[in-house]
Amino acid sequence: MAYLRRAAFVALIVALYGSMPSKAAEPIGQAIRIKTEVSGATGPLVVSDPVHRDERIRTSRSGLGQFVFRDGSKLAVGAGSSVVIDKFVFDDSRSVQKLTVAAAKGTFRWISGNSKHSAYQILTPAGTIGVRGTVFDFYVGGDGTTAVVLLSGAAEFCGRGGCQQLTRRCDCVVARPNGDMTDTRRVDRSILRTLGNRQALPFLSGGQQLSPGWSGTGCGLSAAIQIRPDPPQPRVLPPTKLAPPIETPPKPDKPPKPDKPPKPDKPSKPDKPSKPEKPSKPDKPGKPDRHDKSWHDKLDRPDRPKKPDTPRYDRSKARLPGRW
Image (tube, rainbow, N blue to C red):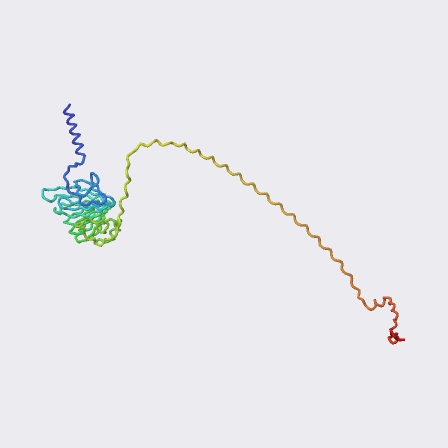
């Protein structure tokens, strides 16, 4: 009975430790530059933090992480990206037998190290990038659309629709998860419209700057692209005991206002009595005709008595004073 109990305890310990990621796992590389916010399996990463196999690396909307692996290979992880170092088989020398990077979304720059070309493999939702001693940028959109731009060396992209070879500087190919794939052509600014994201290739367009020794030709994509910083996270305060809220009684509903009685109709004004007609003025009696005075009328009148003749005064006969 004790043996069975001890065996069950050992099995439980093995199960617990087997399901938990080992913090003592051998590091496969380290971070040499961290900008804004980059996180790994255990939380935010800082410069010189180790990177382990199967560790997912994420960057914020303005984050940038640059990593160097043990064989000298370099991987830059741009803003808003997610990637996992899926396989890493390291031998005794300064090279790897297998290094597989699984890119879920975002923008990246790959620079090969000291291992054989066949040891490197980049997995994307639309296909696989075969490395041929190369420097190249690649972008993975939210729908899995993948674009690869060659900067040095050679590369091959294979998906459901076949394979395309990239052999010249600034060669570009775009593929989708359903198998659609463009022919290889020189990259230009129209690639950003095709991808539907002006920030799709920030290392080429100038949206993000890499450290010296990581840079490559811009291929004519230089553009002033502003990347918005992440909004500040609200500070989480420790929970405090709060007094129970005081319940306030609900306000009684206001009684509805009574309807206003309709206004009575105004009485119509009585018609004004018509004014009586004024009596017409009587005709004035006509004036009697004037009788023409003629000489006949004068005959009818009685003759006026004639005044008696007055004697004329004879001055010769007048007695002057002093005369006899």
